[in-house]
Length: 243
Image (cartoon, rainbow, N blue to C red; front, side, top):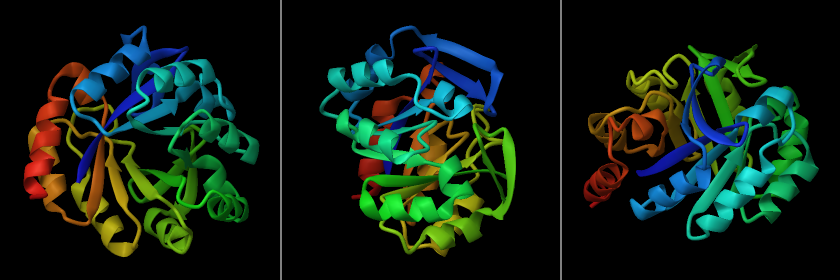
């Protein structure tokens, strides 16, 4: 398992939302590229970037900030999501040097379109499944979808995806620990790498996730900013557990 540090962009700044609620945001860094450099220096191989403004309005907004981050940490593989809901946006983001794009709302609301772009951009698309309980949420977590989490994952399992990110919305930004059992159930249900997100807070959380051998990675956000976990320590632990 590997650890992916997260940068969430709101108004070009590095923030964290509490349970996805925009009015409950914490501003951590005026210069997101500076934080990305810190992650690189700590040993990160991947970086997770979410355009929160984009997720809210349905189109890419923080393009300049994303481009600036990428230019400063060219050694990192980067995955970007938030408001990417058409083919042109996918191409634009990938052309910036992004390794893979994260699709959620449009993927769930128009699975035919998602299937087509997943095949066109094979290996460069990640499906984001953000859920309250077993129900998936879309549109910046503002709308609940009647489809079940595992059913959607199984539906996507035949596509050439890079990974599926599962976020427990109730855990996200709460520093309360991840939903390990639901993440395990999802990982065991499909033959696609599953990335855990939401609530990963301590080194012990990393250890518990890594011990579930079917989980491929963990995204860590607020814990790194609040320093309840050190990124270098978490990366070292995963390397040791992987042998």
